[in-house]
Image (cartoon, rainbow, N blue to C red):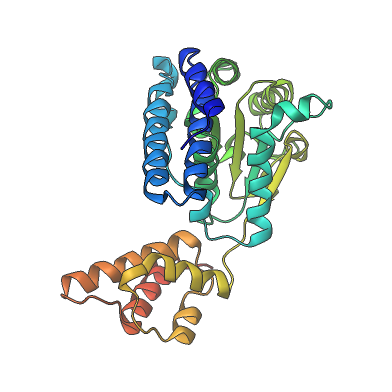
Length: 320
């Protein structure tokens, strides 16, 4: 059973309303019980903590002012890092962001700061938005998706003013703030079709990101990194470039999605048909094949059926 010190610490954290400390101690007790062979009890404790955290995160969700609510999508993600099908070096970089955030006080004691401003670039469907959800889940923070295109107003100065209000919220309410499709306002200032107002908006964005010293995590995404102003890259602590999945990752992803519906697949034609498809497109193709199998009263997905749905995705998202 839990030690006397653990029980006393648990009571203190509860009475002081330190929820995060309480959850940490509860998980330490679960680990202790698991080590003692009490796996059922350890599992029950972890489930209680997970449920409590989800309720806490849901209650933490910020209600945006009415004029900003249309561009912000709040959620409490439940996707862990382990669910992502990504290369090991990439996983290690995300784990480093998580570890630094969790132990930021230790870094501060040595005059260092944790990675808080992350830029994700790469083709659509490769996991950029999913990464933000994973980071929010792993850090037990709510996720707020800022739809950058809806920030832009038609009157001079309004966009920058709204942008300032967003960064005020970032400072006041801790969370993971995802700026989706950042290139909508972060375009290269030297582009011929640029206008004065958008240059002012970009300058404001650069200033707000650089001056931000909040406790939140800021995540920006772009499908077209070549369109972003070079100065924007320097404002981020880390830049992660996403790629389409290679053969090994495609097979791993297909196996994960099909799970109990995976029969004896002919991998060579399946891997060939999935070439140049993104993570999201492969996921959708697998789920289409599963639905077809269910409607045909089959308990396994056959190779021909999966190749057909993959082919349909290739046609739907034909690349030029």
